[in-house]
Length: 416
Ligand code: AMP
View 1 (cartoon, rainbow, N blue to C red):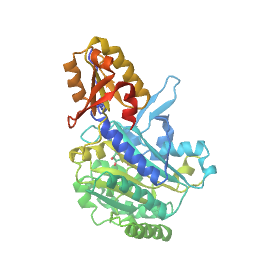
View 2 (tube, protein in one colour):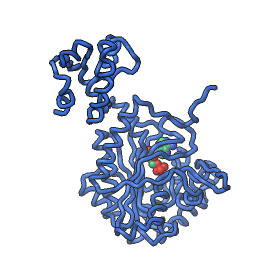
View 3 (cartoon, rainbow, N blue to C red):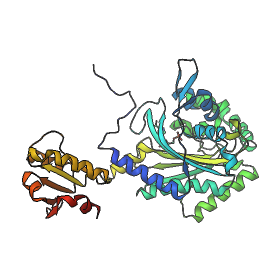
């Protein structure tokens, strides 16, 4: 029988994991420095959690979720994003009681049944963060600055930041009415996808990728001109803080993002290094979501970013992560030494020294080849003669320098 991984999923192979681990470490480091703590939630949740938070009319909920009935008949969904689960956990565990502001982050797999293509998978990985409990523009900008810091830290410079304000429950409905009336006038000429959105979600029409839609809606009113005073003041503060932090941005009055829960600030980071799937990260403020999901009114802001797309850029740049390699490869010159080699390798490992030896009963020549292939820092050849003298020749594999070491003191040697 011939099994293949499911379409749109990918094995991350041992040759690729050093890059993943390096990037994950860098991301965790930045989160730590910004004082965000990790939260790990289950990869599946009750379907209605996502339908309620992301929005019934979004692409994600409408056609992309992996939803199934489990054996007891409950409707379960593999998480398509991280915010809904983080907020569910925040409410369920009363995190708001312990701290006025909860700063959490996550890294993990997400699932969406999209059409697979370069940079678009069905199981992909996101890292993201949520600042739950703050209404201030300072918090929005901390989230944006932290996202950008991650890319900077990894040497990615070719990105751009777009921001918008999508208003709140007071000014957005009024704007939507105005936009809806304008869109009705040209409804017949819009793409079928956009036509479907005119009534329920007219702002998504402005965000359409269809070129004809874009031309038709070019002069339409933008939300940024209809913000109430609170949203306008908040947006102005976000912009002035970004400038103060030296973070360049452009305002895109058409940016709405594909999730319904955003209020006020929305942002997206794109890169010209990517193909048609050029979005690296996105996020924004969601002041109504905690209450919507059954918690207290808790203003919050967050972001989510794709791992695979970030890695695509690093691979394209030829970035070489540190490799996992043994400090020492101990080779047995003859059968008499094999047991000593095995026990010594174990002893070194238990003292924290990465060590390797041969498990395939290979010749000395093959063992030395293996030491090279594993890029061991040192090799040590031990046979009956060495065991008798208590000394062996240690070779530094990168510069071929050699020195005699006392076998009894081998662990001490590597510890220094
Ligand atoms: P979203 O949750 O849709 O705002 O997506 C946030 C980020 O996750 C995007 O900017 C992408 O980098 C990444 N992403 C979203 N969907 C996929 C996917 N199907 N495959 C790979 N990366 C994705």
